[in-house]
Structure formats: C-alpha cells, structure tokens
Length: 162
Image (cartoon, rainbow, N blue to C red; front, side, top):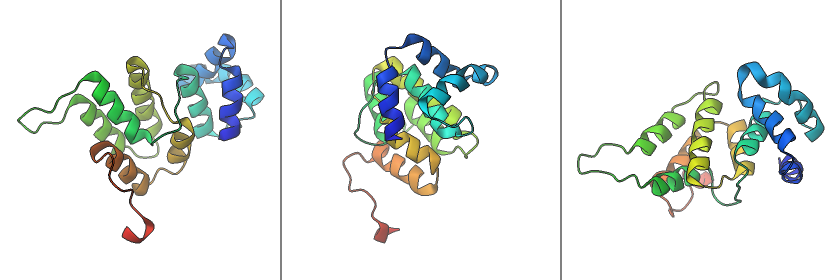
C-alpha cells in the first residue's frame, strides 16, 4: 500500500486523475476508474486497494497515526457530539457501531460514509492502516478500532491477552 500511497501523493494535484479514481466508489461509474487504477499499478479486481484509492481521491488529507477508530473519535470531537445523561449513544457512536457490525460485504460502503464525515470535519485519515484493516476485516480489527474509539490512550491488546 505504501507504494500506492506514494503514487497517489504524486497524482494528488491531477484533478482529472482524482476525478476518475472517485468513480470507483459509484457502482455504475467504476469503469471510468479502471484506466486510472491501471496507471497506478492497482489490479482492477483488487477491490480494497481500488476502494482506498477512491477514498484518497475524495479526501486526500492523510495522517500516519492511529487506526480508523482514532479517526472516528476525532470526527465525534470535531462535531461536538456530547453524551447526555440518558446514556444514549451520540450520533457518531451509532454510526461507528454500525460500521463495526458490518460484514465483509458491507464494510467498504460504511467506511466510505465515515471518510466523507472525516472530510466534512477536516479530519485526516491513515489510509495505509485503513487499507490493511479492510483487507483483513476480522474481530481483532473491530476490537482494535473499538478500543481506539471508546478507550483512547489505553494499552493496545497484545497477542497474549487474546
């Protein structure tokens, strides 16, 4: 992924290329993204890398810190979501919980919604980590994201604890 990110960074100011890459996120426009993906060295059938390239083209503000749980927590803080006395989830918590409940076939669509929220709030995304997490979407990944969101600053879960 780092090679892909390097190539995406070089193309960041190419508005035509970025527009074509965004097409991968729309089902009936995917064919427009295929030449751009080929130029970046992404296989057309590598759905996760193509998806992340489309997300990057949509919101190129990136960071190298934290996982997507950290990003979602930053979205909640920027939106000013406050937990009330009634123990109800904040709107961002509900969306994040919905994301964590997703199976392999749904997670990309739900992650895209959160990246769009990150864009609207000016929150950067760690695309390298997001790509690897989406590629290996497991209970462990979900737990790591949840810990980063609801227990920021806590020690990461080690192999021996599982």
